[in-house]
Image (cartoon, rainbow, N blue to C red; front, side, top):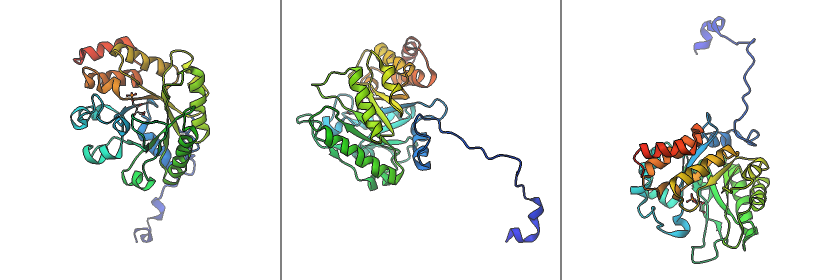
Length: 292
Ligand code: 5RP
């Protein structure tokens, strides 16, 4: 009713101000739909374009691995310092407070335990439940060269199709069986295959040689897994090198939650990822924050 009372003259149409058309800051993601970009924008910091994802989904095939015996005790204190929580729906519903403002990367594949052939995974979450849990990303293992290579690739493509319907991006995790060599050539193949088949971002391992060729020929963002526990200076050096060589962040578990001081370690990792801090300065920061 307010517009009928003669207020027409006070309207401002700004006819001489062109509407801004903003690009999108994440590599290869400019043509995605609004909901996808909004969710990716929760995972990847819009200022740095990077992310510190905290991975603690290991129990989905390993059970209560070292550092994750009690997720409420070991992981909840780290929540304020990460950008994204990578978690199974079981731990999410049982332990993570629903009031968290952190985006959720939901583990969406599973099946075999460490006692069996790990590549024999299937999709383990319905897209409806991912929506119900307000997931900002779905994570699926892809075993290129593994015994169940095709099955794991199809898990990924099915999740991508479901994710596109719901507006939820999919992170492909390039899993490497014990029998495969972790070479740059292997990771170029695995990451590129995942991107070509629709993954919106990729998690892969850092390699000392030619990592920049892996990031350069993958058309979507790459985050690195931490892998097995390293001495803290080496883990920070790996983060630094990966960021300098084109990684868009880390999705790190054991090198954070198995550190002597996990709260100090995650802050040191943040300094490298978001602040471009050197490994040496970040390690000093770790010690200053009480790390040993
Ligand atoms: C399982 C995963 C894990 O989340 C992730 O790799 C574990 O992180 P980290 O290697 O840093 O402990 O994807 O395959």
